[in-house]
Length: 401
Image (cartoon, rainbow, N blue to C red; front, side, top):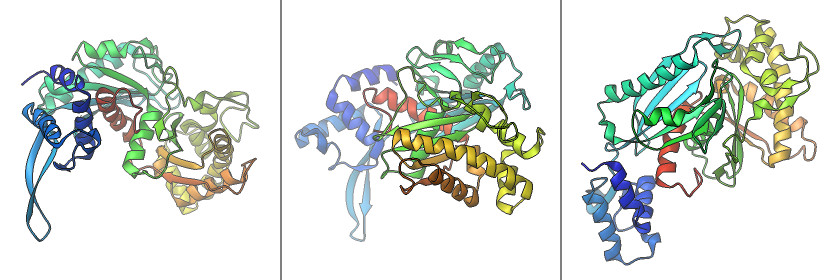
């Protein structure tokens, strides 16, 4: 079997070949007679390009029957069990890894927990321990899956902190001690020499949830993710917006003023993370206790627990104000809630929707649509594996375009 790097170079060297491959990869199985029509080349040329992909063993052809007439037709599709991307999500609670095939199905999933201090909202593991956990995790998931390491074509990294996407460096993760200027790209290429793509977790969660929900009719939306902090994935004009260095959507680092210590965990000028992060919910609902989970809190809100309803209504009020500000900035009323928010129910969503509408300054009558995601915390790792393939095969286009 040829090394994938050789195949990729060959495919990319022919503009029509890479376009055809991407069409089959995204839309397959597709009828052979319909594939490559947008290339505007002759039928013999299209079939010659298809044969080249089939001969390289990355595209397969099969004959099927259609309808009651039993008409036989040829379809082509990528060979999904031939090459894989590996998604890695680095966050406070641990390291998630997903091995994804070319049809975006997860072949193997592993999770390696960190030691954490929930009250302080940080991992107690050092930088070196977490790096070792990532390295051993990569080797373990490949071993468990039985995949040939040469079939791993790219790494996708989800980082909950500040990054330099261009250099593949994790600049700062506030939830892991000493996690500063970590060259995560170089660390991973020491294991397998393939491209490494780095992106913030909130954008990857947006990518995953948009695909999961099948939102093909929405070009502009904002994805709000609740993990330890509050993330913002920005989807504008049909594309994920990452910014110059990859840190667009660092919503949790926005400086805000807070009114009273009772209403949030800050009580003074501080970051939005302090006002609306997971610890703020726990503090409001349990007065500092750490035995409650986000799932329990949201369930109790739906069942009418008086203490939880009172506390979360204050949280919703604060969140609604900030979301109304986002509506004014981005001119979109479409939101996805993901992460811990997938545990919330219809009453929470409806109350939040009404609060956003109530705080709109310019147009209080515009449509506000808030929906829950399906993947939650799993979205970051899934999005990382998906993003790696998109960047590898289609680097000149924005993800999800």
